[in-house]
Image (cartoon, rainbow, N blue to C red; front, side):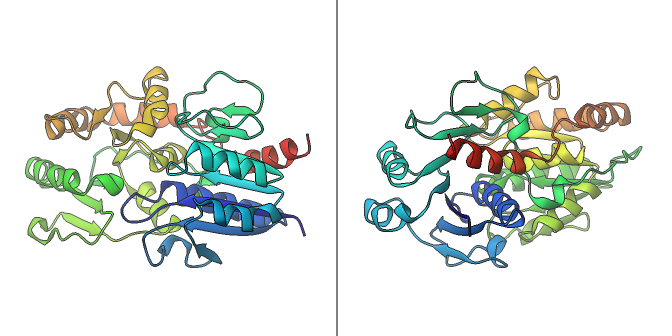
Length: 321
């Protein structure tokens, strides 16, 4: 049987964006009839997102693992910000073909690899390098097309800032809840950090959600305050109005795509000394039905949901060159 190995990393301390998109590639590859081995470098004992599939939790960023394991695989997918250039060189040398997922052109990757930049802003194309929104990977529930109904009033807001955003989420809850007691705020936290002191009748804490649960929360929300990474791309596909927050350096291409595409006037940085005030300003603008409807209309069809299919096809086609 045709086989693919996927190597990535993630967990409660560094986030699950890489794991989520690799899980989407896993699902697509299995659907196409491939046998897939999924290996994750993590400090967690288990990642709930992957509980339903066969996954190995191994530190694969070492030469012993690469020499003993990778040589048996012709098709390799790697999604990592921990792996060094030397690790990538060894992976490419050992594998028949290597496809690397990257958001920021982090390092000078080996010439023999295929590199896919997954972001809203396309970079200059060249041999074995592909970029832009056509390659954006979404989890399966978000690949389906659906119509988003924009309500006249904002009654439900989702806050999801990822692993770096627990403290900022609490700051937002205190600020927004005080200004808007009639709006229900649903906050997705990245760890078990307690926020009991902030619980009020209109503030609701969400535990970690699967892809279907996350999709339901995004669809139900009138507005989402989100990190500008993988979740932002799912929100765009759902056509739900959003306020983007820059929480990591590897989100820069998404941020440029938002601003250059006219989808956001400003992206607030999570470390801004005026963070809550800047978000509040954006929030007040998007309380307008007309503003939210326009943004939702602009998002329609921006991401078509076929990125996983294109990436798997790239892997196979480039491996046959």
